[in-house]
Length: 218
Image (cartoon, rainbow, N blue to C red; front, side, top):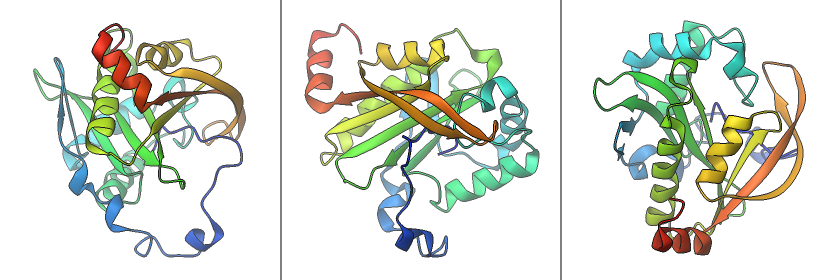
């Protein structure tokens, strides 16, 4: 997905890279198992054409683009339209969500799930428009996303998340969702055109179940 931070050296297999985008659309990558998610203040659903203007406006921000992996900067309306098209075709991640406010439908950011090749691990990625920072929206969205993964994907044993070392707010979101620090490394930044230091976190199913029963974090 657009905001995902991949661990250093992670890439598609050569065989997958040689296939056309249409050929890479495996059935499990389509949105049939990506339900609309509801939380106290948010509705998370598939991106669509009506999001393009807001998406382009919020994503065209260096403070956002330099904190995620695969977002270009500047970010244009054409980039936003292409993003919506590719999510509809299943070309980005397994589930990609537009994060919107329940009270008025305003688009505020994106999040999503990307499966790893081992079949047991997925990675979540996310970004939020600057006007909506420091209001708890991203933590709320990530709680809903994590719960959806573990409740509907019985084959998933663990969820990974990454953030730039300097991104204190993203680290706080990850920790509030119960993820535990695993290590550090480098990830490519499209906006910066270089590799940047990142931290890697993981939440396994057993820990998630314990946290749900304790009610202390999630």
